Structure formats: structure tokens, C-alpha cells
Image (tube, rainbow, N blue to C red; front, side):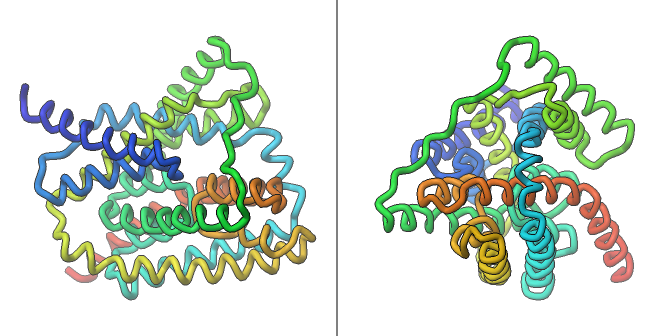
Amino acid sequence: MNAEIRSLTETLAYAAVGALALTALHIPAGALVGAMATVAVASLWGRPTGMPASLQTVLFLVVGSAVGAAATPEALRSILSWPVSLGILAVSTVAMFGAGYWVFRRFGGCDPVTAFYSAAPGALSAVVVLAEAEGAVMSRVAAAQALRVACITAASPFLLSQFHLPTIVPAAPTGDQGWVAWSILILGSIAGWKIAERLKWPSPSFLGPMAASGALHALGWLALSTPRPIVVVASAGLGAMVGSRFRGVDPGRLLLFLPPAAASFLAMGVIGLGAGWLAGSLAGVGPIAGMLAFAPGSMDVLIAISLATAQSPAYVAAHHTARLLGVLATMPLLGPRAARAYSKEAGTRR
């Protein structure tokens, strides 16, 4: 067994432990966060972790097509039901992005690319893939995003227990799940990948399948839901990939980054919750539903809380879906600009 295979085997073993543990505890994005955490600890400990580029490409294809499936006609129609509230969401999302970016640049010592992806509110899987493609410092992006997920996850059991409410069981997949539909999705995703490569998109193996899957679902041609085991395995693979980027990172320097990461989350939370209070009141769904819809955290947890507490789940889901689609649409455009700004900044320093 050569060194690369040994490294991959060890990495996947660490990832499996973390992913299975947090998935069993029903932690949001548990497979990704758990695998990332265990592989990161092993990497910081000096273990030879890593993943081959070919396996990363497969993971990007799977995750990209799964993310694109969120653009269903029903989701797009529901987004248009609250135009004023969605306008407030757009403004507050830009403000949250800006506040987080400023904190990471001013107090976290981050370059523009790392600060940009560290401040992204939501779309964790996409952030991880695109940050990797643009050369961000993945240990910092991972620390910032994992802290945000951890805070929302820690708060959700308290909120649910306060109301003595059950957790929500995900709905079963709907639509045609036959082999013809899956064949169309697979072939469309591969075609999207190759077209994105020709167009020189950043991270073509992710954005191409995402765009192809999104178009097929938005037009109503497909109504697929990626099986949960596949999502869990792919998410764990992404987590392992990110965790391996902690190799060679000084643990002391990483700890020094946690205070600015917490400060950014606080600033973004104040903006999001304040805007949500206003938007929810104006939309007639109430301030609590508004805050759940605007909070810069885990989409599945916040929608589950809205369902359990009967706080306008359609409103909350529509706003999180809109923000997800908006972030996914703008990150590929703005990320390369941040990369160019970093290159220009580095050139000036030299």
C-alpha cells in the first residue's frame, strides 16, 4: 500500500467516525461538520491526511447536482409571495456579508478571498467547494462556518425543548424517482460540468452540475430528491477534504482566529435578526417567523424550528431558499473578484 492510499484510507476512517457520530445525533450538516472536525483534529495532530483530486471531482459533481435540485417550480413560486420582505432579505444579506467581511479583514487578518467565503451566510457545501477553488485559507473558512453551524445547532434543542415540541422528520422524496429521470440528471450534470469547463467557470465540476440540475428542476422536467445516504456520504467526503487542509496549521494561531469568527457571527446575527423582526412584522407573519427566516445559520434547523413552533414555515422556507439561490448565484461572480483583489494586494506589498 503506497503512501497516497494509506493517507486516503486513514482520512476516510477519521471522516467516517465524525460523520456517523454527528449524523446519529441528528446534528444539522452533521456528516460534513463531523467529518471535517475529526479529520481536522487528526491533521492538526500531524497525521498524513489528504484526498486525491479525482475523488474531489466526483464529490463536487454529486453535491452540485443535489444543490441544484432545490430550484423547483414550487420553491420559485413561493419566493415571489413576499416581494417587500424579500427586498429586505436582499439588503440584509448584503449587509451581513459586508459586516462579516469587514470583521475578518480588520480583526481576523484574512486576505480578501478567505474573508469573503468566511462571511458567507449559509450554503455551507457550496461555500466549501468555491472557497477551495479560489484558493482561500480553508482552515479559517472552515473554522468560521463551523462555528456558525455550532451556534445554531446548540440553540435549536433549547428552543424546541422550551415549547416541548417534537423534532421534524424530513418528508419523503416526491416526483419521478425512476432510472430514466436519474439518467437524465447524471448525463445533464456531466454535460454541465464540461460546458462549465469550456466557459472557464470557477470550480466547473461543481457549478456546471448545479446549473444543469437547477435548470432541469426549475423547468419542471425533473422532480428528483437525492437519496439521503448519497448526500451523507458526499457531505462527509467534502468535510474530509476540508479537514485535510488543516495539515501544517499551527493550533495556537487557529485558536487566535476564533474570537474574530465569533465577533463576525455576532455582527451578522444582529443585522439578520433585526431585519427579520422588521420584515416579519411588515409581512404579517410576526417577528419570530421573520427572525427565523433571516438568521444567518443552518437552513434545515431554522425551517425545522419554524415547523415545530408553527411560525409560518412556508415564509421561513421561502426566504432561506431565496437566500440560498441568491448566494449561489453571486458567489461565483464575486469570488473571483476577491481573488483578483488579493493578487493585487499581494503584488502591492511586494
